[in-house]
Length: 316
Image (cartoon, rainbow, N blue to C red):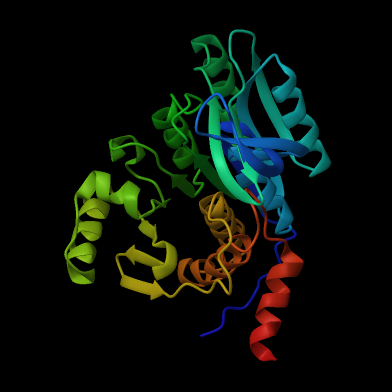
């Protein structure tokens, strides 16, 4: 069944989590280095895009929602770049500055549109900055329809248990994109969105879809989750809830790059739920949004216009 796109203009989303700057160095490879058996890339173009929770926020805004972002950055050039990018996307970003922190950077070197190397720069934020962020979260959550916690394991969500308690006390749905193998910190979430490899770390390998469903439902009940949304790459998505399981096949017409697709999925889920869609309707729209972004290079967004065009494409 084709989903109906709701009016997203009044959706208010609060995104909190680990932000990062995705840098892309593009160039050509014409020779191998005489110093080592590695390609020499002559860089001719550089791009910078928001990553992590910043990419989630940008996807929410691209889908028409009113978005607030809360995170921590360093007192450095990448942090200033992220602030400017969020302002350009009309996102109300509060990026607490930590003078001892290096803003996380993922630097990708590409030759002829193929990724050759990724270099990460990162460090953990200070306790004092996190406490200040928690106080602001308690104030901002009252004005949100849906809260998204985007966990990339960089330290911005060290107080995630307190954040979830605050959001639930205000009656706000909490959607979590998890990291690591300790899911107890996400107990009580309205929706948890792992991918296959992330879920396998927690519940072990499964033999078939029935075995997967048993493990997913057991985890959902153990943690008191409202639902578990599993993104399965070329196998689409599966939503496990008290009503059972709903599978949605992958809809990508051409897969170019899957980086950042999970950000698009949880952003679309948040915006659609805040706009009145059911979880199943939101999943179907999120699946379409993911099919659009994997056809783009690097961390990217699915705009409301692109999603509308995709739905019209089926009619045609």
